[in-house]
Image 1: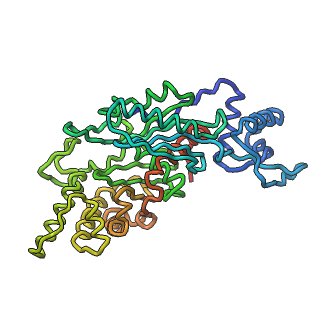
Image 2: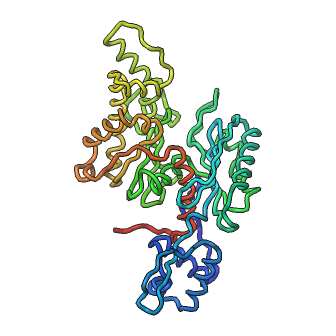
Image 3: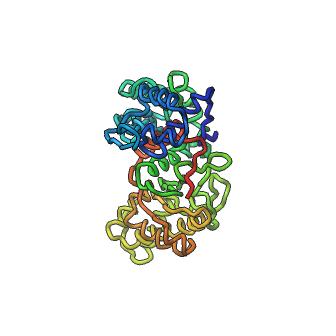
Length: 404
């Protein structure tokens, strides 16, 4: 996967550099008066007036209702980013549907629609184009204030009868070529990223991760996936695929994972393994007939209905997960872990055992400050993550990093 955490900033003149600087100051520090901007940047009044005028005319910034006393003549209205009138189009690609949304930089979804589609190249391409065009039609941002088209793709998808694909740009999604198709028809930049990465950005900017400094998102939807956000920026690793939570080695099994390991966490927490453990537990205490379960989510339901065996199976899974995540929390000084997917759905029966088990695997000082919370935004976090990513690209200082 290409590294899209930082887009190259091409500034061709001193005026463009100064404009970027002013936008970034307002973005990072909140509403600022022209006097305050001048004090920080030491720009000449003439240059500052011209740039602020251009930003106001473009709609990128607006004057707030608040009036600040400058101490130097008339009172000034601070400038702020026009978050509610700048935004993106987001397209979440699922194996059987495309979810389209128009979202502003406040993270508010202005319009949303889902499109059922078969997972074939022609049908998926057709529906992808339709979803984009419908979103564009519903978009109310003025020209120049629609910043990006963001496409979320699954990290791993298994096609029936074919080997599992671990590259998000391989297999059927490579055949569909979402980025290429949209770039041919879109008039604004298009980017593609993993769903988990964008969900993590969305949760940190607008959801359960808000206020965290180093946040890890862990999702469980048949397999485990993860993403790590450091002060608003994704930690991607050398290939862009960092935080493969499910591929930690736990212990040997009778199967090999697509990653090549015999006994990674994905195998120990595989749906069929969860169901098998529940059945073994039931048979160990009674010879009575038991429910025929084929979906592991039923085990989660039973645990929530006071089924002790189901709760024990999920607590064991939570312990395995904690044993792998805990050392990372210590080494990376993670201050918040967000559980998504079925981990969020099972928060009543998995969150507490997971948090308690972390005590054994996280250093004492780090455990005291570590929070574990269920995801707040669901899949919509990916839509909001597109907005968060676009805001960083267009308004943040290049390579900005909060220091304490």
